[in-house]
Length: 177
Image (cartoon, rainbow, N blue to C red):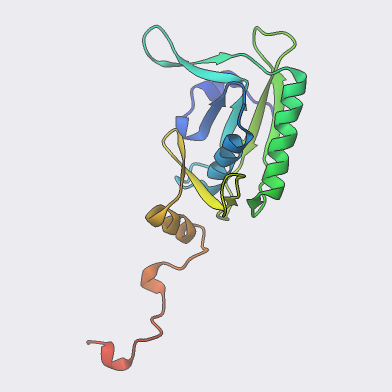
């Protein structure tokens, strides 16, 4: 699949995450998990490494492409895919594409392409004792807590909606007809 960066630059923020230098692999994986969970039902998303969102002279979002050097690109790709296999449950396997960085010879842009799945995925980060579910709200990746987590699990079919659950303590006397 051939990715057109200029096309991605004009898409919704909820489906694109721009990472300038990828200092935090866990942050990339959290975003991949959120795109896989696809809470807003948008069809997944893209994590673009080696680019950042800036404002143009009129204050509108614009993209600046810096690219990654070869060693950094390989490290980011390998560590991210390893985390997706080993620390995400169920495992996520994003597609990757590497393209030339515009105006930066010798540097590349790494793109993770994340399809939405029918499962709710959680990630066990190094700093956490348990796995955490992540979703996208607007252009932010956030932890799915309380009602958002319940809603995610219901949407993914991993929890039955409350109005379809059986009350095991109810009897015929509890019904009013």
